[in-house]
Image 1 (tube, rainbow, N blue to C red):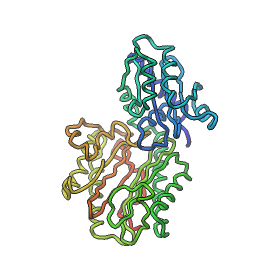
Image 2 (tube, rainbow, N blue to C red):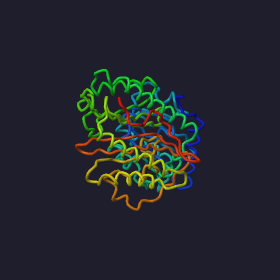
Image 3 (cartoon, rainbow, N blue to C red):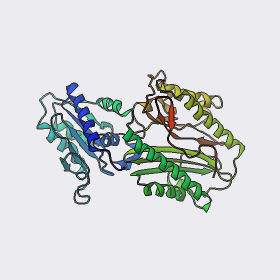
Image 4 (tube, rainbow, N blue to C red):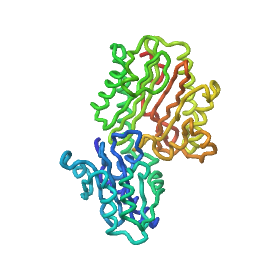
Length: 398
């Protein structure tokens, strides 16, 4: 299971080109980063969805024009990584250019076929470098740029197909295995960064194309710790130990989080876990096909606010969609971050649809007391939901 079939990719491109025609748009320019940026890139997901290409640490531009074959402009160095793109794509027009020159080459290509007052859709403006965008504009002075076309692709990505779910199930299984690796390594007198390394090795050995972890080991868990310098503590008896996993298998995201304590659980830590578990269970109770996903988020908030006011606790968002993107479009809008709450009041309902994949990860960090977080991959089904990650989510004694 290493690649989405060419027939599926061709059908996706055809659907997008049909939408372009129906909208009176003559071309689509998609700027995308490689997978190395992980959850900090939204553009990579569109490129994987349409042609399953990953430039790793180099950007790319995909140009789609109804009636013409797709063209991929990639910043990967041909003399260093020969035929990286050509060997995996179903279309043959791949052009290797220096990353700052992507826009100039795309403009030259499009000028061959566009009408004088053409409308061209662009995806990736927010992540595009200034030289790329400026050269696109200068090279196509008469073009009217359409910046919301990605919404049409977003709607197509909401429900996961059986093929996509096979990748997500593999990602979930790898997350489970990584927690098992952590459980076996906690007592080996290793600092947190080495425990993280052991987990990430397990992911790479399983064939994941991207993996990142955070691990917080402290008397009171305070925040998500990623960097080596903040993960030097060797877990001690009585410490809280929280671990989070983010990875991709074939471009499809997996994500899970677990909470526990080393050797013995302090009463205050158990209380925080119990609140978090109540939030998780309330989310599942509210998650039903056809219902509003915003109510799932509200259910978690109602549990938290029975115990703490907003100014007493720290948190980010309690859930999001998963797919080709870490925060997949549409579903993620139902779960605003703490700092987005006021602007999200009165947000539009978002229907929970069968085939929609979520990451539910309620959490709370209380200064001076500790923290707790539970994260699982949850698939909306025709009759309810299915949890794809299976490592025990009870409070763990590591």
